[in-house]
Length: 265
Image (cartoon, rainbow, N blue to C red; front, side, top):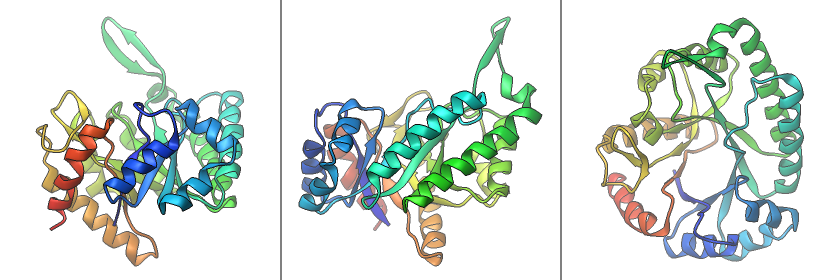
């Protein structure tokens, strides 16, 4: 199992993130394409040398709002960006993490209705086709693609996860998102053979997540044991679980790293 941190908003360059990762004796950093300074430094082709300097590995987070189930002409734009940054990250990015999102909402009399749920027969083949294209792009550049469940996990998406599972995609489990979601994601994990190769690990209080470990009400032991089980599965298939302690500031990381390592004992 490898332990890492997210790229932080408080910093203005990748090197400051790597200095903190080194200070905390972490294995990797999840770079994030939502941050302009990530994109600029990748395009300047300076990142590989920085990672080598600090002996830190890297994963990459795609744009949060990217929707691969949307209209095809929009999805094609995301695929162009996927190709661009996979090519730039070839040789030093282990995996590309993308979100599975619930899609557009129509609120009727205060009740949220999910358009993809109503149009599922059109939505799901479009989503699967584009996810396969994205995965092919990643794999071409030696990068694994993982799909992460978000805070917007809603009951209809059980069908989506089953269909993605049936198509042998790899997943990232965000245990903090489970804590604040309406969908019963852990039940889905028991029901379907979802294979996780990454985890985003942070605390939650039922309403908020990305909290420092130990400051919320999430069952950290249960979550860790699930991550450990999938680490064992990944190792049996020539990989291992990469756990990103996805808190959002350096102070919370300094609290969360020793907390997580204590769970590992």
